[in-house]
View (cartoon, helix red, strand yellow):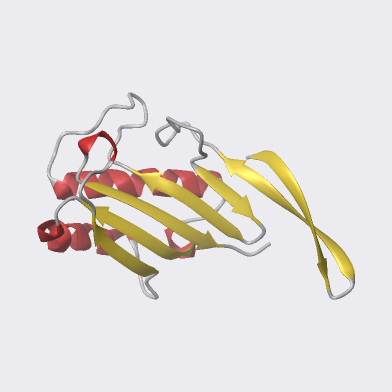
Amino acid sequence: MTVFTRFTAVKGGFTEQMIKQEIKTGNAPAAIGPYSQGVRMGRFIFLSGQIPLEPATGEIIDGDIVVQTRQVLRNLQAVLEEAGAGMNDVVKTTVFLKDMAQFGDMNGVYGDFFKPPYPARATVEAARLPKGVDIEIDAIAAVSD
């Protein structure tokens, strides 16, 4: 993790400094724009949306929504691990699907990666996703200091 920015906040009359840290790993696809794979701020880790790219090549993986969902969740898992967290620390996800008819298949794989208590989740159908993929997922995790 790389320290990115330092913030100062006043809490109960005491000054508290929080550090915004970039999370970056070669085990997930590199950011292809002006964003980070993840950012940690205090106890929270904010993960950018992941699509079904193979980290080593940056290429879209071949396969149906089951295969794509599995790769997306592996990519998110890799960023979390770089931050010293895991899938059990995820408290919220947003799933973007190209076709809501794929929800059941996506949900089956999703359940393999998350255990009770499950994260809160929103799932939306999106007309277009980056690189024409069928799925993108972002996440928020909470960890102890």
